[in-house]
Length: 386
Image (cartoon, rainbow, N blue to C red; front, top):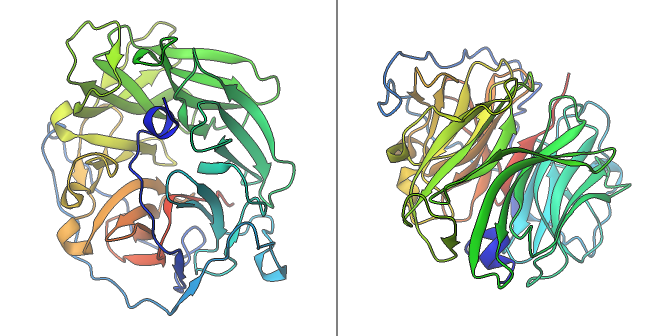
């Protein structure tokens, strides 16, 4: 099984890499917009719709240099407590982790050396480090969790996933105290013809010790894209339902998704079962916690699946499943919104904007004040700042 088939589960696309500079800052902006008001409705019902907003005029675009030819200059130095966006670019067989300020300046690769594919970055809670996944080649089934300083120095592996047994780990994220990293792990049979296990696991950054947080005993269901709550007591993640029979002990590699929900796991009670806070018809993906811990944001529709872009909208929901509220509308934004994350103060939402080549955009917490920050980029994460 190739990396694209197993570990990525993603389609291949190629675009020129461009960046547009806009004057809107995210984390340190003095925004006064309040968070969405949650209504007590069933999780499958939209409670309210965000205000209609229009696209701003973008600044002239400039090419992003390749990792092979670029080293950060003085204008690209990542200073402590400075606002930066980390994201990825590439064709999904050769990706690169990039950095840019929210105004589009200072664009440079995290690791200024061409080579392995690097993707799915995430900031450490103190903003000093960045994790990412690395594959040694397009066809490699071995994958690594790497951690580097914000300036790209001291890049080192903290976990290696080798097949068989660990074939498709992905979408790692930090614990609130920065001591561990949680990730999804799909295991396969020796012949790599079927999925045999779905686990959410965490690796201790200092020791490399791995612990299992959740295992699916029915491979009609798999768990993906986990993220810790701000207090570290819960996990939010995707609960994905496939078209193979209930009670399956294996899952064909060519199985299709029939629905996805957001699940929450209480980590304070060993053996606890995950709770669904949306239903499978919602097709909910990419959960992320509000800094207060009282809201979870997600998008409807999977940007790498068969769901049309018009279905990619952002919603918020309380951790108990109540108060589901629509935050963005595709028809108002002029494109889809996915893979969202909050600013440290909870006043803005950063997300992947799907309108042609995906870019990086943000809105205020009530869905207004749209800004396009990076013209082409994916899987954005905003640096935590004080």
